[in-house]
Length: 174
Image (cartoon, rainbow, N blue to C red; front, side, top):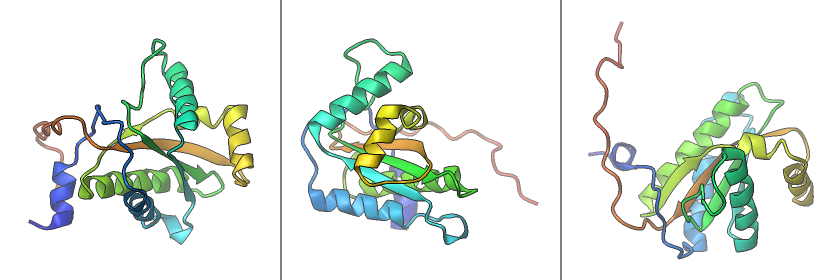
C-alpha cells in the first residue's frame, strides 16, 4: 500500500505519552511538514510555535486546563513533551482551513516518524487572552492571529488505539 495512504489509515490520536523528548531533527521535520500543507491562494497564512521548554509547557497546560474546565492536576496534553501551536492570520479568508491542514500534515508526519500525536483544541481561546498576545509580541509576531489548535507530540506510552469502524453512507458519487 502507498505509504501516505497507509499513514492516513493507521494514524490515531494518542492520549498517553512518555516523558522522553523526541530528537530535535524529528521535530523540525514535523514542523516542516506543516509548512508544506495546502493553503488558500498560496498565502501561507499559518504559523507554528514549537514549545519544548518545560516551564512554558506547564503554563500552556494550566491555561488550557482552565479553559477546558478540568480539575487541577489534569493535563489536557496527556503528558506529551512537545506542543506545537498553530495560529493563522485572520486577514486571510481561508485562515481556519489553512491552519487545520497544517495540523493534519503535522500529525501524519509525526506518525511517519514513529511518534504519537493528538490535536488539542482551545488555542483560539488562549490567544484571545492578553498573556498569549504578549507572548506573540515577545516572539516578534505582529498582526491579528487566531489560535487554530495544538499538535501534542511525543513517544507513545503503550499501544496505538485501534481505528473505529468507518460509518457507512459517507461518500456519494454523482
